[in-house]
Amino acid sequence: MSSSEVSTATDSAPMSLADLAYERLQDRLVMLDIRPGEPINDSQLAAEIGVGRTPVREALKRLETDHLVVSYPRRGTFATIIDVTELGAISDIREQLMPFAARRAAGHASSAMREELRAKADEVRSLESPRGDRTAMMRMDMSLHRLIYKAAGNPHLEDVLIRYDNLATRIWCLVIDRLPDLAHHVTEHTDLLNAVADGDADRAERLTREHIASFAREIRGVL
Image 1 (cartoon, rainbow, N blue to C red):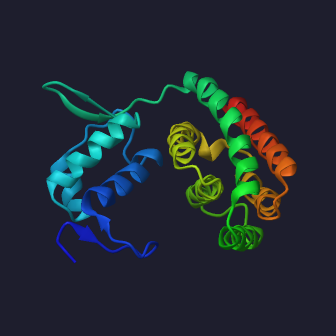
Image 2 (image 1 turned 90 degrees about the vertical axis):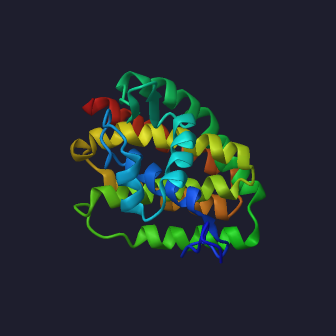
Image 3 (image 1 turned 180 degrees about the horizontal axis):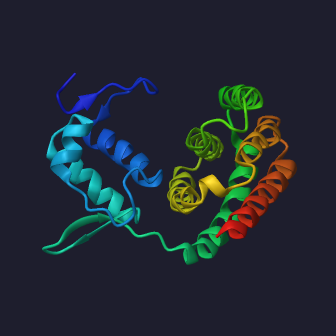
């Protein structure tokens, strides 16, 4: 394996160092480990991730396209500020595309993907205390959505939805400790995952709409 590639635990194919840097930095920006408005030190991040500065710089270019970082001439690169007033616009897009993705996944998922969806539903059903790690719960929520997007079999749709999920999640992380029942929000995905796995497109679409609407109400209630 060349020095420009690393192996990952979740994918048998090698991941480039730039992709690794992108994945790690994206997670830190979305989960607010890098705080909004914080300056980005590419040398420090390269050392923390264990890659060179070039992969980090390549990753930052992609993250700027994702609206997670912003660069200013002669000032540097910063994590984007979170504007909670954007939640409505972000939700408008997700409310249109997520139910469509769920419906499409119910109709297009492969047999192997349906098995994976059922296994994930079983995993979610067995989640423990609602008082568990709320950040871990949020990451689980994101992973469930991404599995459904992947099952839809449209990479362009998947890419758009992940991008808007990331922007929405940054807003949610601002108020994560004030959300009344985050665990229920995550565990209610069980029925949705099974609906997709069973090929029940109408139910998958309906459950997705209900899921988005209920959580949006919770978020607006604490903002």
